[in-house]
Image 1: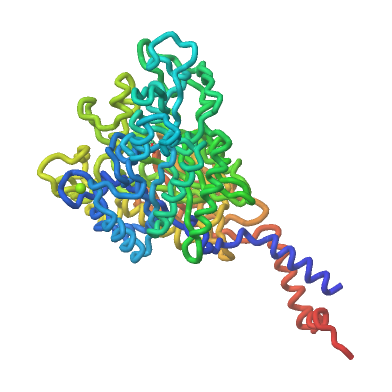
Image 2 (image 1 turned 90 degrees about the vertical axis):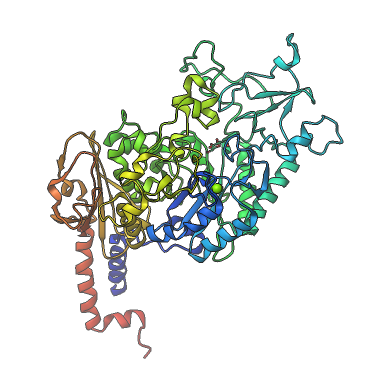
Length: 624
Ligand code: GLC
Ligand code: MG
C-alpha cells in the first residue's frame, strides 16, 4: 500500500513537469544553430574584381563568432559560366576561378572548423550547365556508343507534327523561368529538357549512371569535410515518362503575345514525382555513411511549394529523408496580407502537420525572394528577426538580415538576373537582383565589400553611409545587429528556445503572440509578441496564458524589445502595451498549477513516511 502511494505521487510529479530541456546529441547539432546563408558573389571580395570570393568569406569568418551564428551555407561556388550565377554548374567537383581555387576552399573549411563553425554547401542535382563536359558529350550524337548519350532528358519531335522538326516540341511543358522546357539541338536532331534556363539542361535520373555520378559528388564534398548540403530545386528532378501535356491553370491570365509562364500550368507531370523520394533516401544513406561522432551530415531540401507538398520531404521514422525541407511560409507574407492572424496561419500550417519527432524550421528571406524590408517594409525587419529566431526550430537567415539591409533598385538595362531579363513583361516582379546587393560592412567605399576602382557586380545600397553597416551597428547597443546578437544568445542559453514547445497566446488581426515554456525545472519561460497593426495594442496576456499546468504571475520582465529600448522593463502581464511594428520578448516566471498542488502534499506524505521508516521497508523489506 505504501508503495502504491509513492507510485501515484511519483506519477503525478512527473506528469506535472513541463517538457524537459532538449539535450542535443551530436546528431542534432543543426537543431541548436542558426543557419546563415552567404551569397558568395555578394559577401566579401578579396581581389578587387567587384565580385565576392572564398578568400573574402574566410577573412570574415570571425564575424560569425561575434554574432552567435554557428553554421554557414554557401550558395554555389562551383565552376560555372554564371548563366544563373552558379546554379548552372559546369564541374560539380571544382571551384569557379571567380571564387578562387580548391585550395582556397580547403582553407575556408579549415578556418571555419577551427572557429567552431559548420559549413554547408549548395548541391544542385536537377541540372548542370550546358558547358558541363557531360552535356558537351551528350549533345554530340545519339549513338549507343556515346556513354553520355542518356545523361540528359532527350526527346524526339512530336509525332504527327507538320511543322519543321525544331518547332515540334514534345508537349506543352513550361520552364520555371518561362518559355518551353524544350530546346532543339541540331546535332542530335532532338530536344533536351530544361526546367530552368536553356543553359541548365536537366539531368536524367532514369539513368543509373547519373545517380552514380551525383553520389560521387556528394562523397567528394563530404571527404572535404563539408557538414551538410542544401539540395537545390528538388521537386524538379523527375518528369512523367508519358510526356503528356500538363493541365492549364484556370487561375492564370496570360499576357497576349507573351511566351508561356510557369504559373500558366498545373505541374502534375514535372514536379514532386514520387520517385524522387527514393533518390533522397538513397542519398540519406551516404549522409549516414559519412556521419560518425561528432560529425553528423545535415540535409535540407529546397522547393517552392505548398507546405503539404513539402512535408513529405522529411521522410518517415523508418525512412528518413531531409532533416528538414525549407519552410518558406513566412517569406510569403506581404505588406497587404500582414496581420497577426496571417502570421499565425503561416506558423500553424507547418506546426500542425509536422510529422511526429520532426523539427520545424523558418526562413524569412533568401537570394530568390525580395528582402523582408521590401516585402513588409523596414518597420518589420526587427520583429521578423525575432520571429525567425524565437519560433521553435532552426532559423535560416539571409546575409544582411541581421543589419536590416534593404533591397536595391536596378534598371532593366543593368539587370543581371536572367529570370528578369528573359521575361521583360514581368521583370520587376521577377528580378532577384535587389536582394543580392553586396554585404554592407562599414562606411568605406563599396561598404567595405570590395576595393575595386570600378563597379561592384551589383550596386551597393547607399544606406551603408547612414548606419546600415556592420561596423556602425556592432558598437550600437540599440542596433538591429545588437538585437540579432541578443536573440542568438537567448537561443543558446535559454532552454525555452531549445524545444518544440509552442503555445499561442493572443492572436487577432493586430497581434501574433506565443509562449515558449521553459524546457527545464526552472520554469523560466518567454512570451513573444508582435504587433502588426497601425496602432499600439494593450492586451491581457495573463488570462490568455493561464492554464491547469502552471500559474502565470502578474508581472514579467522585458528580456528584449525590437527597438532594444525596453529591455529590463517590468510589465504587468494583464496589460502589456506593444507599439505598432514592435515586438517584445517577455520573461515570465511561471509556477506549477493544479497538478503541482497535488505534487506538494505528495512530497509531504512521502517525507513523513520516510521519517517513520516505512519507505525503506517498502523497497527493501527486512529479511528476518
Ligand atoms: C533554386 C535556386 C535558384 C536557382 C534555381 C535553379 O531555386 O534557389 O536561385 O535559380 O534553383 O537552380
Ligand atoms: Mg573577387
